[in-house]
Image (cartoon, rainbow, N blue to C red; front, side, top):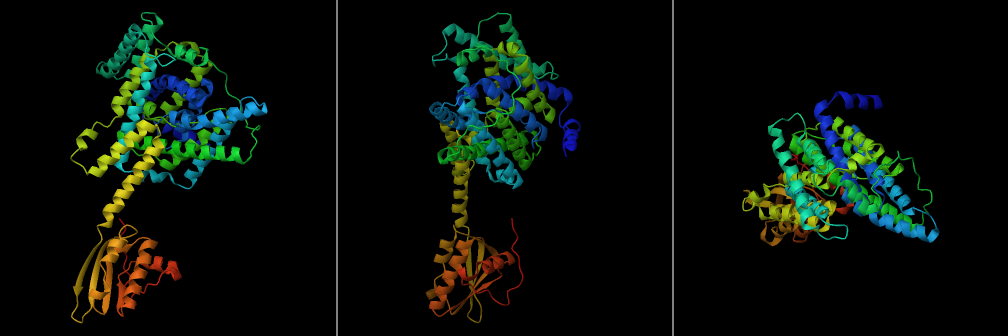
Length: 529
């Protein structure tokens, strides 16, 4: 098994060695500032976030279901686990245990990884196919806006004040220069990713002190009081000091479920987005398993966990990275930066990385959204706007997607409820036949029932289900109620042409329903669409 996966890693690639390698180096540089920033959000040392990016990136790129997609420490996961770290540290202060918050974190991430692997085993990754396109558009737009807003923090001091005017102009100028290089360098040559060229070019401007601007080391110094980015290889940790009482267990398990859910939704949505961009198809269940494995090992070796990163994934794709090698190179390069290249990485201007992310925002936002107004149903526009606003206001991508799916499902149910039609016609022997068209389910049963009035019908009535389908228990219950209603009126009701699936449902319901199917009913199956 491992030998087969190793062979696939180095022999079956969608990209080229050169493109994947150069793209991986570009992504590694872009991973550094965000991993540090997300570590601050989670309340842990930046090295924890950096090693998380290494583990997530290496494992998901090697065995994941979407070559070219980048995973690492993310803001969505950092926000969720921050409370666990805080409460763990408070409990540690009371019991005299140092870094108990970290142990809470590692336990949470390992359990979340196990849940994600279980989702893969149960093959639930395919549920992402149920996400409607308006939800996807709202998710992408909201994410682009969130990325855009988050970059403005780089133009402020540690206490939230805007930089002085000359520093602000330099930052903005370098960011603009980065964007110009990314946009126009491909016209000179596409042999080297323009993003990598832009970071190196702007980095050299700072390195030779041509301008004075904020660097990665400055950000690190503001957050931790130390500009040292170097660290040793993490050793295996085990959260053995945790007292698993009811409160702690519910806290860790509840947070783990949230982490697993948020991580999978973000990862599968990013997978679908990359699928659309590359016109290829990833494997959702395989990605779920890879995410679970990566998170478990991340927690086991002292990481804060994470999931797919849409920004870095887009950087990788736009830089030419298509195969697994790009993600592997990014992870290994980041590990090398941590172990050996801290001082060099620390000299990268934040403005260069901000410029890269601005270009990611431009490429991520679905500009076609503005063309949908007046051309698609108002409900779809409402879903797009709702998901976008929830993403921006709450910074909760998983909640935004779930609410969007619920709204879309309710809209679909409401519309489908009006698509059930009854066409009556009478035979020569006085029998009235109702031809039913549509799906009978909880949303349509009321309208169906209200159109059948025993007082207005003859003594014998037939409902023909040749062009209809019974979908749930609500429909079985309403058929039972209608049958009894006609019996009390002294009239006979027959059901005809029920599909085999519908008859099995009635049989399985047993004593719960009182429905009589005509004995001469032929074996007829309704096609499932």
